[in-house]
Amino acid sequence: MPTMGALHDGHASLVRRAVESGKPVVVSIFVNPTQFGPHEDFDKYPRTLDADLAMLEALGVAATYCPAVEDLYPEGLEASRETARNLALPAVATTPLLEDRCRPGHLAGVALVVGRLFDQTRPRFAYFGEKDYQQLRSMEECVAADRARFGDLEIVRCATLRERDGLAMSSRNRYLSTEQRAQSLALSRALQSAHMSFRPADAEQMMRDQLAQSGLEIEYAVVRDATTLLDTTTFNAPTRALIAAKLGSVRLIDNVAFPARDPTRSKCPFAALFGFGTPTG
Ligand code: PAF
Image 1 (cartoon, protein in one colour):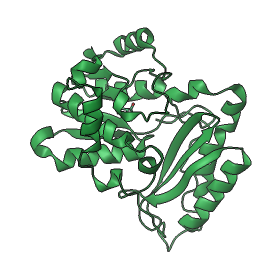
Image 2 (cartoon, rainbow, N blue to C red; image 1 turned 30 degrees about the horizontal axis):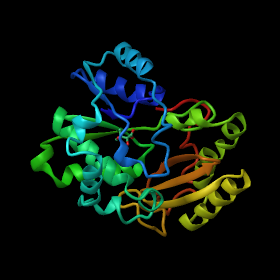
Image 3 (tube, protein in one colour; image 1 turned 90 degrees about the horizontal axis):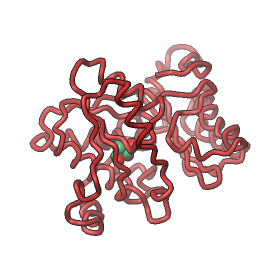
């Protein structure tokens, strides 16, 4: 399971799921420079190695892999960034204009490092959280497109773990001030209310209004086809509502799934989908 460390209960839930499979679990910790843009938080990304190792040991992982930059990028960082820029990425990593637009080069850096981590550790299963949904979809497509390289590797999707009040767990939540922590609830609340709408466009407007009212700077607040992450005009096929928004310098992302709605049935088909009162996993 690839991670960048600064592990929290969300990571722990993925690790637990992997350990429960009964197979030996390897967790990597590597803050990957090629997936950060020049003005992003690579330098100040939280690094909590001792606590991470203690958590992983308590969870019963078979091994922890903490590579140095040279182990993953022996050609040097500049050459690796160039390699990332030239990677052939799946459409879901380049066309939705979500993370691909807001963080140019990010998904290429993820695909590069994850591919190399897979080459080095040869996993049969790899666990990814749904919180980074475009990342998850991109890795599913990368693996499916290169069976010669990845063999029968399966990507295992793991549900987003939430704090009791609904905030999706993230290593970046620790950057939030008390006031921002309160404002951050606008993301999960906006996603929660999106399901009340009849059309994706209405849901998007509702999410944007709620985020703006809480003082968040919106990067995107959209409802998309759950597979392609492209625009959709109907809820009759599985969709995802996805948000990226900033609170000061802290960038938060979150998303929820809406199963296909049966147009012949109730008016509010997604009610009771959410358990925001309790942590969900
Ligand atoms: O989701 C993350 O923590 C990172 O993007 C990943 C998958 C570990 C690659 O560096």
